[in-house]
Image (cartoon, rainbow, N blue to C red; front, side):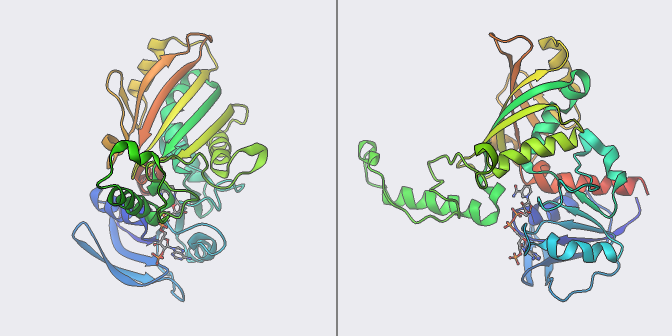
Length: 343
Ligand SMILES: NC(=O)c1ccc[n+]([C@@H]2O[C@H](COP(=O)([O-])OP(=O)(O)OC[C@H]3O[C@@H](n4cnc5c(N)ncnc54)[C@H](OP(=O)(O)O)[C@@H]3O)[C@@H](O)[C@H]2O)c1
């Protein structure tokens, strides 16, 4: 593969993972530039990176720009993606700003690789929760179609950025330190701690059943992302999808319980066969796929496959994946690898 000039924008939870993955996969880099809001020197796994403050920079000569900055009008991709594209770079964006925009491919390579090559300078990475669901269901969808699925997610704090993951740690320490000499029975009295994670409620020893803001029909923005992004990726708006997304006190790796109904009548053994051969899936017929085990890995772990005893042709599965890797940085780097392989 030809070596290219790469930019990484953002060095938070996803950006740092991106730098590690580029190195781990020997991505063919000629020159690497790293940007964030503030310039500084950072160390990632014994490698030192010079982070340039992005404001006022010129972006000439970059071939691929991997965006891992925050979203919204002050976010990195809203402010700078177009500038990179004008200078000839292909932008791969991790945020939500362009995902549903007409003409912007929304890509999970295992599911819709062909869309990569339709880009007009910008390719969007889906939301972490969507990515692992479409990888887990992708082979089943291709083989049997999908009439519907109902997803419940249990999402790690790092999904909300570096500060949120650090906040879980601080809140947990605070609860533990406050209760050090207290018997379990006395813990029933709720103690007030400083909220450190940036979430609306304490996340340590708790679950928050809302990610993003509440929107249409009482579903949150995160839940609508799962619905709308899946429809776009699978290029099929007729799949009936609903979701409940919850934040749980886990550092890394999202878990999802998915209830699904294939379009064609499907035997349990056929589903197992497909899962065993689905790209990007590691199927566990007997062991439990756990978030701690999937941390730092590249596959979506799938297990707990079972049929609904009351409803025909309906099933459950459980899946976990590292939200910072397959849910974000790895997916973006895989898209970049496909682009290079076609050059
Ligand atoms: N975390 C996940 O699991 C996950 C999964 C899928 C997608 N995403 C998306 O990936 C993106 C990054 O998420 P994250 O979790 O890594 O966030 P994060 O930990 O909060 O880090 C954000 C990084 O973006 C930089 N940044 C913010 N605004 C910028 C701007 N205008 N120009 C340049 N850099 C800017 C920050 O720079 P400073 O360090 O200088 O402040 C920081 O390094 C978000 O769009 C998020 O929605 C995240």
